[in-house]
Image (cartoon, rainbow, N blue to C red):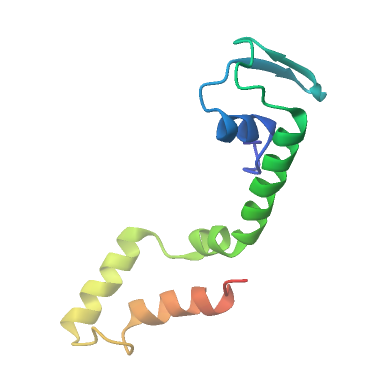
Length: 110
């Protein structure tokens, strides 16, 4: 994956053949060299198709990445749960539920 987490050509190749041995330069597929002889005959078209699939999946999961960044830290969530349980608010009236619901409401699935 690229530094920003988006799928790249290496990810596409790995999904097609996870033990492939190759080198590839910054210029992309024009610089691809198979070090293992490409015994499975993976084509550039297959690589581009797989990359498009991975990019679509990445785009479709944007809400999940946003949610992950916005949820309180796990130790904070556990503290909220503990306080809710002590206050007999282990239901939808508790602060933990409210915090998680807000993140989900603010970042709905597709």
